[in-house]
Length: 107
Length: 395
Image (cartoon, one colour):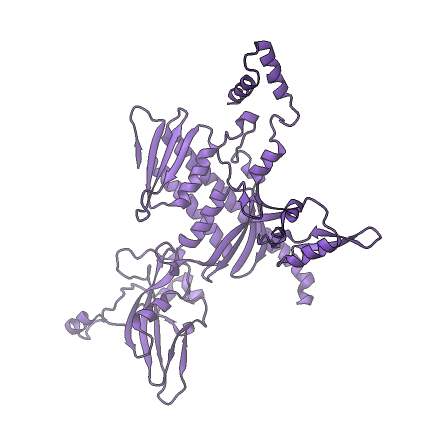
């Protein structure tokens, strides 16, 4: 849910239900990486509420678009992490199976 | 931003001077050898990339997330631009239920997100409801139910749905039976988790209300309504569902005591209850770096090697006169106990303990439900789903 003003789309607060530090801290990082962001921060209003408020102020672009782009960036990063990780595991298994033949006698 | 900074510096230095002098000052600052433009000075670069661990406390612990943090030095502090080139994963150790890997070139905000998701948001199956028909053991019903809940169940949660609407079906519930009794004349008996028998056809306990009405004419209604047997499904016929470990102690029975119960496992996440957490622990630490700023020789070197509880340092021989010098042999083992710099200022000046801010050593211990490498992939997928949900909510 977005809370902002109609006249000035460059600043908004996004209130996300069922999210916590996991997502908010990660998205704050990717938002900070965007040069259009003037300010961003998040807070959890009450620990027993499962919601988080993310404040975004930009240098002029619509806050909603910047926020969406940051989410998109985070998703791209995740996809890259996943493919790199899978490749690393496959490489490790390959090298293990090659080395395994040499060291089997020691076991 | 950059011109702002230069203006303030120059005006404070040349107060009341004419514009020619001001220009000269500006030029002087720009040509200073230790302020290279387009590159961070080494001390700032050190603060950006390393945590410096002093004897009393670590310093420079924060990360600089803002992309324009160094724009006055014409340095782009952007991580995303060259993330794909810089990011690396190196697997160190991988076994059936344990894994150690290095994640290099990532911000703590993201590394921590993966860690948090692994602990509390990757779904698994765990026993949620226990129907106790008979329990004459000394362990109380509720304690027994709690113990059963904590047993990891080896079943792929991706094949199940969340049981939100309370009707137990073959798509959301796994039923186990436990029926053990200790003979009156026998020895005391340990009940282990391998005695939980999977019931692919669902509950065998008839609903009481149903009993009196329908009689024996039709199949009696039970606590679950399975439309088909789970072991007829191809996913389960090849690898039957069972507790991940068979030798977990559930209870001890004395002669004549008996436990008869049915346990219903459902899908859930660790945020609701830690019994659904797929990992025992998962943690990361930043890569330790130990730099010897001065040569530490002979007796001092031996003292240093002896003082470190995890044997980070080693001794090498130099020259002919049997001189010895301390070297850093195993920096990865460093636990940051700071024992080596506790002895006084001299040591702190000679040894610099550092942590690399963008290099994480992850260790994952799986509870046995998933292999650890699958857990990481699942965790990253969950973060992707979160992003996807936010994007679709906002558009």
